[in-house]
Length: 122
Picture 1 (cartoon, rainbow, N blue to C red):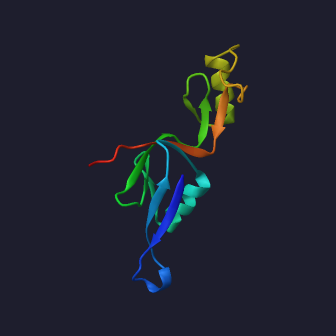
Picture 2: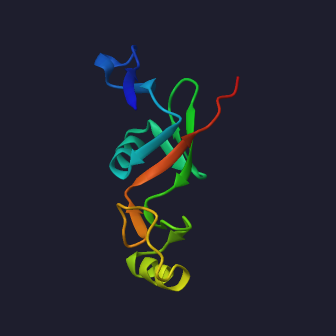
């Protein structure tokens, strides 16, 4: 995703961010936790209601499919922590090889918001 900050021309020397412009983005987007924290603090992104909204013209929304945390590679269920993930694998998928060759334990931890672009109205 490529973004451009658009500043208020009437503010003194571009000191006020007006909105952002999306130069390039896909229908599926991963937003890092660091980016989300910074963008929310700067005021050009909102997080809530199961979605991320960018302050564009018109606003651009992404529905959160998976938030940062632990997930089972077999059934995609969200898990509380590493201990809960191991317990889930042992109880629900014993002896089954992980479908994800990069997460051989059968669960993964993601550090980003996995999102899908919402349809624009109009």
